[in-house]
Amino acid sequence: MKVLIDTDPGMDDAMAISLAHKSSAISIVALTAVTGNLPSDRTAANVLRVLDMLGAPQMPVAQGRILPIGGDYPSDPFSHGSDGLAESSFPLSRRALDPRGAAQLIVDTVNANAGEITICGLGPLTNIADALAIDPSLPSKVTKLAIIGGSFGVTPYSWSQATGDNPTSEWNMFVDPEAAHIVFNAGFQLLAVGLDVATHPSINFRPADLERLSQSDTAEAKFALRVVNFVQSRGYQSYCSLIDSAAIGAVINPSLVTTETVRCDVATEGKLTRGMTVVDRRNHHRWEDLPQIEIAIDFDYDSFLTLVTDELSR
Image 1 (cartoon, one colour):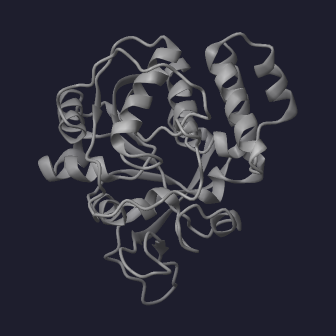
Image 2 (cartoon, helix red, strand yellow; image 1 turned 120 degrees about the vertical axis):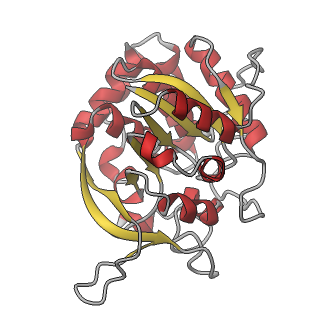
């Protein structure tokens, strides 16, 4: 399966790219860098660093706009370290960025692989919204858009682990809700893996997983352990290292995720609600004009953790 990864590395993005690279079930054909955990010039540089770490072949990597569609770039309350990669101190890559911007690379890649490519959105949806402005027919050419994004009220972790800078939102939605609104309404076959499952305690690495990683000599396993140690030293749980990998896992093996079809859109204003993914669950008077998407409501955490540990240790 061909995938294009739109990403904002970020520690968990780097882990997700590693998982995608190691998996024989999918093939990365391009990556685009978006402003999210860091501005897009820094996330683009980190994509290249991660590809170097993986010893990955040359592939197109493009940078998106610096500022979100909404204008301001909010301050991330969660630190990924000064380098965005858990203080890994990877050297600057000698790989060159694609001269096209991220949006144009998305359009060109999808059109070159129409009907056989999945987009994995691991950050805010700015680049994908910009690509839609160039080619509004993109959703008909993509088999699926799988994103890490949103908080849907399926489990208590959808609010207790809220990552946006208000009480109701998830970080990827909060950074650019205008872009998310555009993408949700564009007609993609959209799967949203939200905080409900991506921050569930059962997604924490099990002791046996960490032991297996510690016995492996792969660069990916060593990086994973660095990230786990980094987040745990700051009082967070190890799921923080695996959030974005949940979307990649759901693409590698769709049976990992249980989904529900809902009517949902993204709030673009309100001090308390900007970036909130609003689901209309009413039995009567439901707004049927809201976009229809699939959301993750449960996850096979044990199989997912085995998949991640197997691939990163291999």
